[in-house]
Length: 86
Image (cartoon, rainbow, N blue to C red; front, side, top):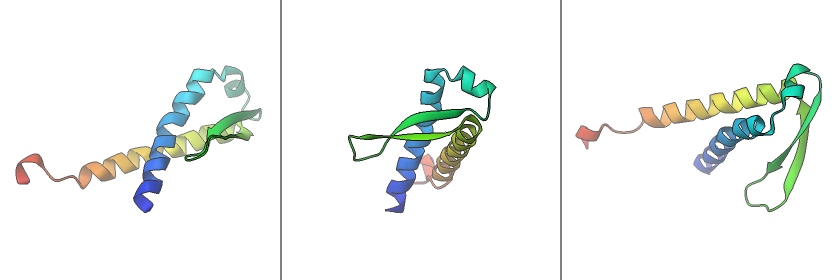
């Protein structure tokens, strides 16, 4: 259960910054208090949910998601057995 939650959060962390860059929110990045809305697709649902935060909050969310993804990848790499020691 926990592993599936971590995998879903890693997948979201990997896709969210890419989606933000694709939209070109240059105007929102200029004003950190401007409200920016994104559509979030929940796993297992065909309906997307509209989520609104300020540009500064989105930046913090994206940074936290990226940090979580890096931590999970590093943790998985540390727990992987060496190739010659099987």
